[in-house]
Image 1 (cartoon, rainbow, N blue to C red):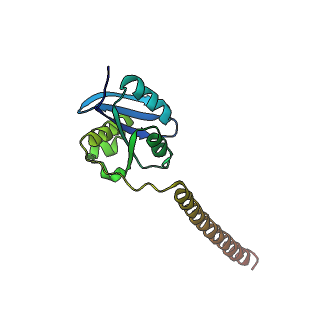
Image 2: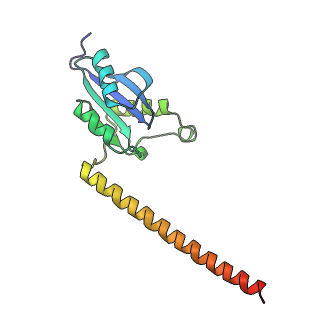
Length: 165
């Protein structure tokens, strides 16, 4: 079957060990499944099942960074990264987190053109940001350890004066 000119919408819930993937063909739900966290795996699946279609995907910004975004775009899948707060959720969905539901929601919102992508920095800028964040974390840890040492010395000094009087 030839899908020339048809739009395929992919909602991804990305994690370190797997991606929960939902596919919509135009306005209809097709399938939700789990896959290895590889853009090439997804692209091979799309090429096999939906040849010559227009591929659109989205996933929530997370600790994974933007590697998946870059790989998907290089393969010809037009991807956007969205702010998790921009995806409408109910109170029940917030309390009962489910990856399949999240990917279905992302795919549905993408198909309805209700998602807006965030700014994706270049590789150099992303590396610089990571370095600045890491330095900030280390600075906080150094300050915390200095306070611990001071408190230990003060408490030891107080105890020694009390015991040896």
